[in-house]
Length: 195
Length: 164
Image (tube, rainbow over all chains, first blue to last red; front, side, top):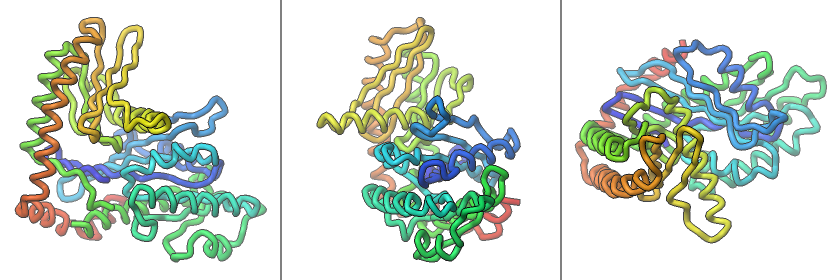
């Protein structure tokens, strides 16, 4: 649910990075944080365990610039990917405007990716959203590893609607900005379409 | 998705702002924040500039969501009041009308009793503003047209330009 304030002339939208545990959602946010000018970002908040696994969420506010005199802000969230944090994932999806699904490209993680995509679909449904209508960008992360699944196979299992997808190596920033840009554009276009 | 947008215009924003300022003064609070349940910051009062309001808003919404989940486990709809006591500053959270979150930060210039009382009084006032906002959105065709005109003016080029 975006927030449009005609007094302060600001639009704020919520983007959630979803995906299985250790797929690189937090790494995406860290890269964005480390490569964004200081006047365009707020504090990166991480609610993580002592071993740096996401416990509840990471949060990064970004101010992208202005459209028609309105400041455009995106609030980026990650969910905890581990299976047993199901309740937290559902809470964080509340009021979402756009989703980045970060998949782990390693062959042995395909089942975890598919399980997470099913979990996303179900959680969206429970919030009254339809995965086919929400702005969604798929990111195939960790493409630099030797044991990655072919892109055709990843698309067949995770992208049956043939949506936008990007290859990424989030640790080095490859594909991170492209993914964010794509989902942010979709969110803004969706906002326009909804009027 | 975005048809669920919360849209705020000058009149409501001013009413909310004055309710928050009045609450901050009457409760002798350090700062007051109003946040929607999705973590968007709606308004502030007091010494709010000394606190990262955007971060606080996301964490307050997360706290309310998490305790709401716990409430569900024991058969409650929600816990409408939450209190966090610190050594120097404390935070009092009230859920207003099941939709927005009132966050009051106070120190030893005030007390939990006074903050609770004033928060309850302000909640009623804020709830009325949001109910009127709902009615306005439903009834005012002009306002919809105004929003529509603004958004229809956004072009693909405008969106592309944001990303350089």
